[in-house]
Image (tube, rainbow, N blue to C red; front, top):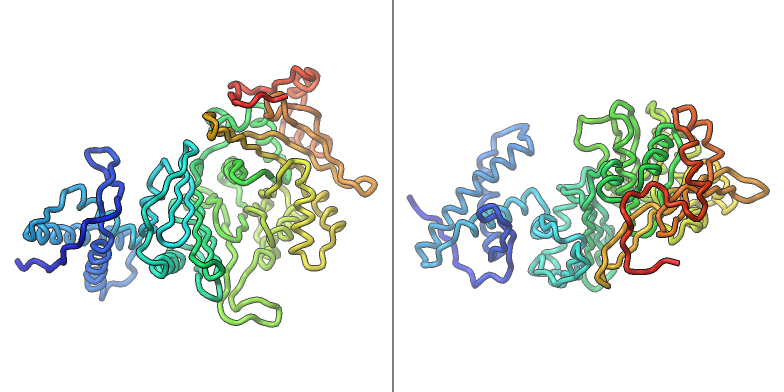
Length: 484
């Protein structure tokens, strides 16, 4: 047979994680070769599928892997004839890289596949900062050969991976999307000297509320019982906290607690919750805003743009009682407030430095993004719609040889307005180690809790214990810092 001509390349400068004898090992990889192989595989698949119709993504991927093995085997033969043999581990790494370029996240895929990496900061194609689970930071390999190549890779990724097509261009210099593994990617383009990419990996993407209690220690049995019953009773819950404190993880876990046969809606600027997956296991209607393209109209919207505010009215005609709005960072605030004032069992997350600042954060966002919505009206909407504020805290002592701890520190009941002020009751508040312990019995949702069989008397002994109240936390919180 004739052997395809492959041009030998200089010694590779990057590495790819590959499985060798069942263990992950870094294997040298030249991405100039990967591009060459990628093009050859793509050409062959295009020829094979020229007359095919209704080809499924799974079949296309299976075909790419088969053709990829053939092309890489031909490359290995050519390199052996050139006196540069290719090891089986390198062949596997090349195949993984080719398939990742076609169906995954390209050269970013190796970072997503590495379990030791928690977050990634990228400045241009070659400045890569890796954040590791132990708190350390290291420099990573370049993710592209040029900044232009990086942008092209991100543009293709946005069009191929996002369920609702996302665009990265001069007219749309921001990109916020979910990657295939559930990680969150944010991109800035043109507004900075070099492209900026931030990837936040979700290590507890599928964690259940039971796992957050038993394995991760984010809640105790009392909080587990209270939150599940509050959810069952239809309480509207806002989860607040600092970045990376576990807000979205807790929201997902609560969402997975909703019975599989109960339909509900998720509204997100960009999909992150993933509660609609795996498809067919529940009745989640996942709605995501559409970016829109082209010129702006008289209302300041692009053609095809669909915001959460636009979609809110239709959610009230879909026959569901729960609406979950994802992270509330900007213009989601008004749809979130409206969802909570017209539905039961609504949930969302919001950034706040402290539990007592949550209402201030709501008002500030609402006044910034609510057009004619004033501070008093925003406060009244929040007081009317929100039943519980659950605050998540994070203590990160990895820099001083400790661990990173995430836990619920507050559960605050919102009791409406009285004399122009919002009535707040701390149902659970920080104990001696900062974790939430029972403080007061709820008032506003008391009857709703009783209706679903929750016995409030289980909180009374802990409340009466006063300073000795340690809640039902099983494991000691081992921190370096001594709390007063």
